[in-house]
Image 1 (cartoon, rainbow, N blue to C red):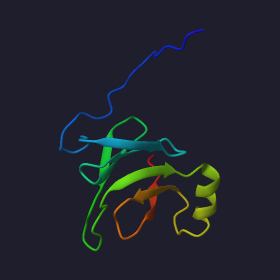
Image 2: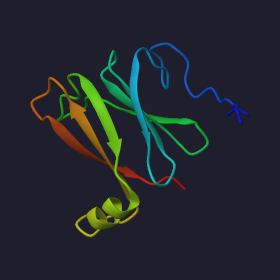
Image 3: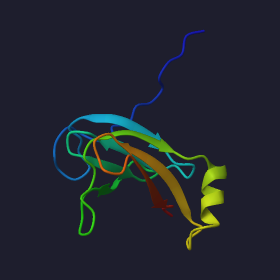
Image 4: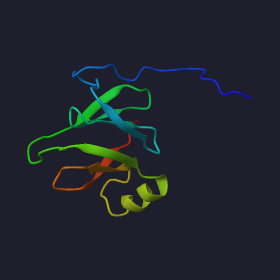
Length: 116
């Protein structure tokens, strides 16, 4: 039996605008269905909701220099999220580990608030 694709959805176009990607290298989906895509060229992680709509870009901001070269991403399974929720003030989060190949912090633990 041959597998076949029954549906394809365009999540992001090529470009440098909001939600667009230049060099996507890795992706993962959280237990609640949030999609995160690493764009190594823009040094960001784009976040899309369960309906594949762009929500935000995780990038440099005041107090944080951002990613140097995000090389990998892993969405932690529900069991890990439940454990980390015990040490967090907000139990409605999923957790993601990002490898920043050239950054001063090699592994970064991100919390992602579950979208309604």
